Image (tube, rainbow, N blue to C red; front, top):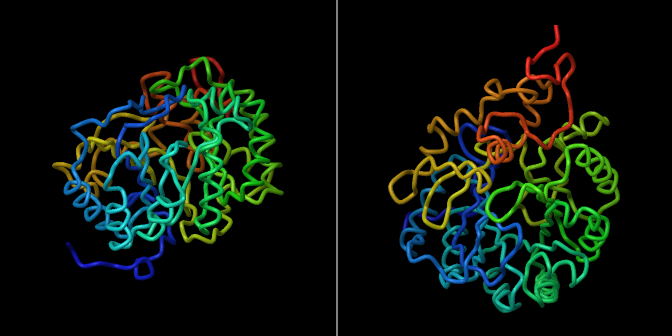
Length: 373
């Protein structure tokens, strides 16, 4: 094993140089999961794929991640990462190499207090659980397994008893939008350090018909901006990058990052797919995001550092001057950039305008001709 580096010895991620390294790297350890969620990006299955990265390959990959100038936060996700028996070894290797790791278990009986304690002992920095309904009826219908709501609450409370910081994920779509105020209150009650709202991208099992309209996004984002003022949690939007534009328009700092006690921190710049964010699949495929499944390479043969820094796909995604349509004309394009994942899912072009944004830049024609004369 290479020489270890403690978290304290790692250089701080003080500047937003996303050309050099991502701020966050999400790693899908497995697609195996005992839930059958209606929106699942991974289209998770009950059984593990025999072509998953082996333990040795996974450990080597973590060592490669440590080669970034300032290694990203490593999100161990799935499927259900607890379905991999070597998950504690992977957390331990990350911690030994100076990489902060977070874990996103499924809300099942596998997420016991004993397993969370073992993960914490191995070096886990934070744990994240999904709540897509404020009641058992709503959450279990979304997750399509009765009992998931209760198991999730038990796991969140167990993490709280261990002093393990908890992040709560909720999907924003037609099935959940009217329940959002109750979910915000529940995240407060459960002591979440972050409430992460995932704006639906129609990929995997998620369907375009479940997405809310661009006009509804404006209403919800205005509400989120106000609700977050009094919240115990810090708000994080995934695939809802135009929330930054909404904050800027009302005079709020769109990149304000309230500190959290677990050291995971928040990005010092505007993260987007391939620009501060990277994804690795259960079989080692490297993509800009799990919601933007265009494969740039595979960690079995390629260096994650080289792919992120030099691959044309990532370089294009980091160049806002290449954006098209409204996004290309928008004065907020360097702050927001729009969801490249949603643009790709709904138009087939990852540089196209984000269909979920209702904003029309000044002087831009709403017709296909572009700028008004």
